[in-house]
Length: 328
Length: 309
Image (cartoon, each protein chain N blue to C red):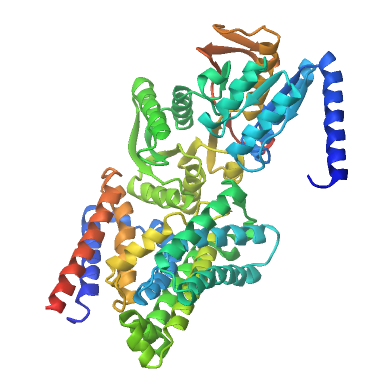
């Protein structure tokens, strides 16, 4: 800053900011929320829930993050918050190791730290608000698939890749649930789409003609769901072959409205933001301590805690009735 | 006959696979799914034609996948803003040609090796796109899919356009001077120069050409679906290079033709749906494709050793 006028303005701004926070700290807790990227629709919908919680609890919410998913910028923002002296910092970590040093520093200053959506190192935060366990995802996928076809018939799976760890784990839980609960259903094929919607479409087209008795396609990677839906639509099998899977509402809206895709499964991002803020405030007020087994978050009710993971619980199912309420 | 033995052997392999499928999995040939599958390969064929030209000129372009993505997303955003397709199509082709010109300038004028130059543009464009779009889909208005035609008509137009381009280019490569220049430069640039050809200009133009074709391919892909995934075209470079090499275009330049590349593309594209129809585990897909490429390369290697003797 070479310009003296600029320097003066900056000093004034800092002074003003500290005055505001000082006066606010008397009455209100300040909870800071760091998304991976603040322009991303996913995190904006998290913020909507967080705003609601902050209003209910009467705390001040600071929502700031990099404009692009930038790990270094995340550190910078946390450092600023430490200087500002906020009460709680909640973080969706872009880089697990990278952010942890800054978070440890915050904890040393007496700031409570929580992670949500993407965890940091375990010693750098008190709790992780875990949006979905692999088991929960696998079971919800399989149960919903069974419901759509009346617990009977052939289905196929589109996966992102045959080797990715999270995909293999979800697939394992889907298959375990299938074996355990739905004897009349049969998984006839598992095809990889390399995370490409176009390839998911070609694979689904081949699956449909190779398996005339197919009743459902389940895609467990997000580009797979619209890809499978486009294949079913082009084959003229809308309604006859169901499409469902893990994905984002905006990528699937038109197929859900056209009746091609029945269910899109993810977690409720608004609830994730809501729960995160409630947990953060409880932490700051010493109402939530290490070793707790459950936690009550306002109107959403009680959530289970496993170790230091607060579980958001069962994934959320988007369908024709509710998908338009979500924009991410 | 002997001259085209290499291409004919690929066609033979393709026919053998198709016959096998006709016997073991006749459902493969049900018209609608087959048309959809073939239409999905139309954009790939267009880019593969460009790649064959580049490799015949003894260059390579591994940035086509990234150029494809960038053109797709830009075209998608323009369409979503309400631009008519008649304007978006030349815009996409022009944008592709522009990136091609950048590659061509660096390779032909600054004399940098094409594999390094296009590696750099490939990574830069891909990461730039990731940074800006963060993986977010572009949703398109309904009028775009199949250019507003019926699905079957749209698919036939796309397949017809790709095949028409193939025929025209294959003919041009054989009968038009500019086409022969590619072979001349790819065989021996110095000899070509002495014969009055300007190798630098030919190299520059061939990169502009593949860029333009990639932009065209992106549009042909855009018209098949109501949304654009920014990752689209990821890995396209490997797919088309493999198709071209399997089809008998020598990686050392100067040899091969578009018909071979076409057969190579079909052979490799068959593998995945064929395995699905034969109910073979998906793990085999890449292995089978790899084996086909290996076989082709070994065949070329043996052949050039024979010729050198």
